[in-house]
Image 1 (spheres, rainbow, N blue to C red):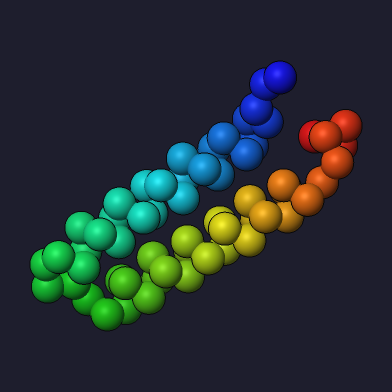
Image 2 (cartoon, rainbow, N blue to C red):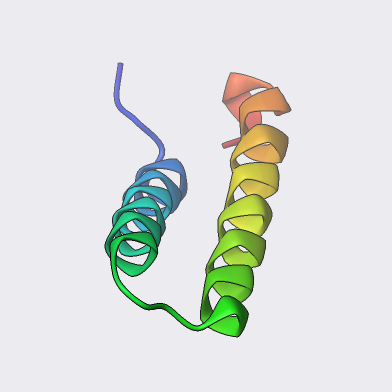
Length: 59
């Protein structure tokens, strides 16, 4: 069983955004930058959920 390349890329992107959020929240981050990262993370999470709901043969 192999993983869908799109699912994998979205997972990697989600992890990178999460890491960026952690880095930004440690320092003196711009509230707008944090908001942008959180919005991107939510969008990626929604795309991952939508992709996970698809039947396996539709990948």
